[in-house]
Image (cartoon, rainbow, N blue to C red; front, top):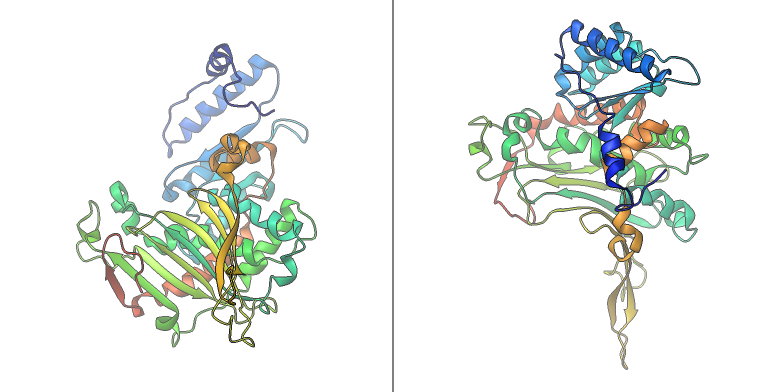
Length: 402
């Protein structure tokens, strides 16, 4: 049941809060998990039924393996039965630190939980504008026939922030921009744009097609690494709290990626992200090929944009004749802006959607084992050659690094 904002009563809030409980414990203490299990059993006995259990691991990734094991050993992960009392686990990114640690962590998860119990979070998948990519592609016959190498020139996926690392210096310096947002958010955006039409719109089919895209990402060879990748660091980063004095950690990257499939052969997918940039914006720009045969219009492209945040929108740029006697052309835009829609005020936040879907058991917006491992395989191949790419120092508030 969805309750519109402002329609609930104060007594409803009190009733909800009165049914909240808190159990304190230590992550690495088996006794704490046993106490939690007993507390939940007491509540089940009080209500006369087995409760559903959703464990959300919003903790440092270094604690995951220990928490997984303790949850399993305490019996907390055992569902009551097929028809009641399910148990599920929500795991935050980053899932692993490279392909080896991700594979080890996934093996541990697989030993302790069934796949339908595991919900690996990439909250970007739950953003409304990102979800609309699939609907836009497959519900409008106008675009899907053009969604291939014959008509698309390039795809540019951008995730830029105006802020620096702030108080996250110690954490950020250990991973860098590529692991922080490249391995997860940006590759998931790429997969949504490039995936083949699923056999159905259920979670299994959609996740299968996303994984297929990531599995066909073309490894960048050592001889091409410097021409395909740019990495940078904003001025003053090394003076941020918690950051090492001579650190080589990147706060910006730009990667030219390619997908080795018939649909996308030779189409570059540019992945770009940076901190301390001139604007705060996450968007996907799809550039359609211009007519090279007609020299009059060869420098004009149609660009389709999915703005993920802020000011979510979908727009397409096109060209029309300028009024008058000549044949000059000028750009125009068709767009759908979420804030212009009255329902925008009740759009769920990404984490609201994540929690809701985990509760109802819909895994569409959560990454599968195959997706995680394929993404890490691609990113690890880049990281292994990272040091051969010069680190560019760029000014704070930069519009471009290259």
